[in-house]
Amino acid sequence: MYGPWGCGICERCAAGQENYCLRAAELGIAPPGLGAPGSMAEYMIVDSPRHLVPIGDLDPVQAAPLTDAGLTPYHAIKRSLPKLVGGTTAVVLGVGGLGHVGIQIIKALSGAQVVALDVDDEKLALAREVGADHALMSDDSAVDAVRDLTHGRGADLVIDFAGIQPTIDLGQKMLGVGGDFSLVGIGHGTPTAKVGFFQSPYEASFLVPYWGYRQELFEVIHLAQQGKLTVHTETFSVDQAPEATASSGTARCADAPSCSSERTFSAPGRHILPRHFSAAEMNGRPGGPPGRAGDSAAVGAQGVLAS
Image (cartoon, rainbow, N blue to C red; front, side, top):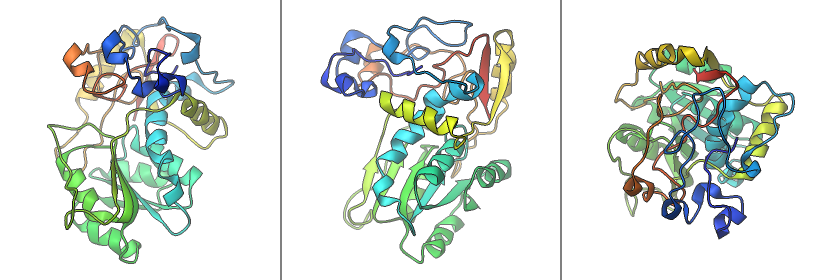
């Protein structure tokens, strides 16, 4: 199911860009599970057939997280693909629910080498397992390491799945001339980036994408059907939702250079239990609430917990 529902009739929606619907806030439209009823149940009501995407013989447990953990990094990476030719470098900050899928997307669609950063040795091992060329501890030493790996030119893409001030600062130090910095994660507080002369590389772009387009979800599903994307998951029955919540509560997420131990019931994301956003918060983004869809898909009577 495609999660960021829109009005279906504005210019953005007509182009399949419902994540940027021009009237969602005005009409009070919110994604299911993030402001509207949905998810963490055996069944849910989908408002329109256009929000359903066929998965063929793909395992529903693998397919469910792709509506967020696949679509969100795919949308963020796709716009930078022209820069990710052979001999280029992409840095992935945070190897959590979205980050480990992002690594696979970059490897599947580009010729770039992937450098993954995290503060957790298990996450770095996961990064290597899913295809990262290099996996480094996320600290200041990584800046020199990336410079060495790129022969001094810096990264062509830095994609931040943590979204906290330390990762933004670290990532900007690694970015090369003409590179893209894509901020996907939504961390603590209101972090800021330094943009301007003598503060950021020449012709560098700072991007803040939100979720993804409807057509892109079809593309993500096709990649999964081809065996190019695998989501690491744990499954729980609906009755085990409290257990899943408790499991997530024990995950370590330090306010350090990387914060990637995000784990949620139903799909990788921000919230264990549905949260309803106010009208003021809905106005924060053109397409809906100021956050990523964390629990927007139900899989029969099971939920999925991304590792």
